[in-house]
Image (cartoon, rainbow, N blue to C red; front, side, top):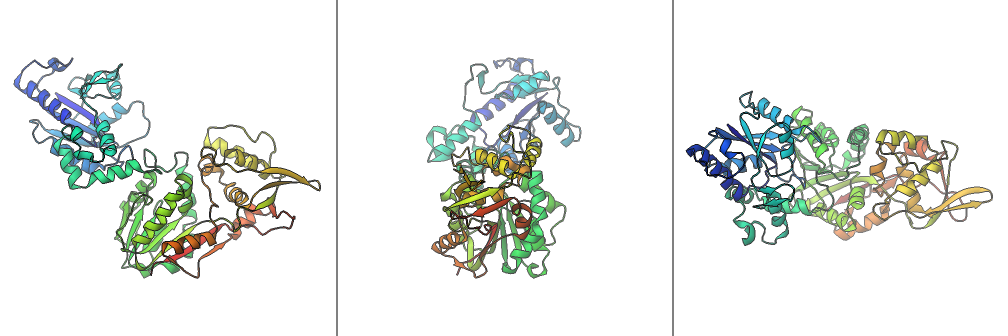
Length: 527
């Protein structure tokens, strides 16, 4: 007879240890004085199978601690329990109604068929609603902390409740009100690997979501495809400024820029460090490394958020590269987050080190008013406000709208949840229709309007918050020296294929204006 103990197991409690130990000792001695509903039906317990769920996740609010440390904690936890403990990592597979069956199949597979758990040889120890999945499979449940499921009454605090208190209490693990409730195995592993500060930092992070995503509405397949398609262009533009030595790419996505840099003979002796906060993209980086796609063996990846803390040691990096990242920090975080991000990069660079930042950019005098004339001839001009939940269907619908109608949809959707929407006025002058709005808002529309495959995600992102001159001022105030090659520019392909024939801009005197810049290359050095 086995006990199955499923859970994420980021923290183990003294109650859990006492409960399992007494259960095992009671069965080993043949005593029948334990009161749980099904305990007296158990024969001698042969072992405890610990299923560590979300084993492929770490560095997220729901799963801050990596699987290997959770497994070490469980082994410490099991030292005084007199039956074998078997630990198996169960990857997250998204929403799966029959997740319990998946767990059982994984355990059987990982144990080479030696552990075929079923209702005849296993009882499940669980105090959360997950128990219902196992009850559907006819498993008996030992409810541990739980006294009454309907009333949600418990005889002891659950592990995640204690993690939240570690986060909230200034003394953390050492707080007298919770110290004794947390098992010594957790104290040991958390202290040895400095996990308390890491967990607090992750839980406090204002930008990433519960599962390590900056945005939950992004289609990562199309996002990765777009990043790979322009990887060569990005590398050719930025590579002349790379300093050999320790080279970091923050927001490295799927590692495309690092792959090209590691193939470059000039950096054969360099070490490369990719930092990616989004779990889906980080997983791809690790897989690519396992596949042997990086020529340089000294390529390392970490799932970290570079906004709230340093991701490299101070004064350690010769080159830091970022691309299409700083506007996301401004959009999903706030101005304070962006300023902290800039300071962190300065602190991480060694003397003579360089930060290479490539991103979208706003126009100069962005708060001035302009008149924008949009085509109505390149699509439909009706029903622009239709609500569509399916992403592919929404893309097809948006693609069918004229540029004018797409602007109306943009003005309706753009940063609505952030209460940061644009304002505009329709004006007719000499029989021609114009839209009066701020220059930076016009530029945001022009740069965003064609990302219809990720529309819901893009509607959160403000591209044109700073001009190149504002960027320079902020960087100089931080301590950087600005390289002469720093510039804002217009991508000729974007101008030719997305602006011309669709958008015209005029000043308030109806003088035709040049198109705004689309990108910036910023080379900031630390001396």
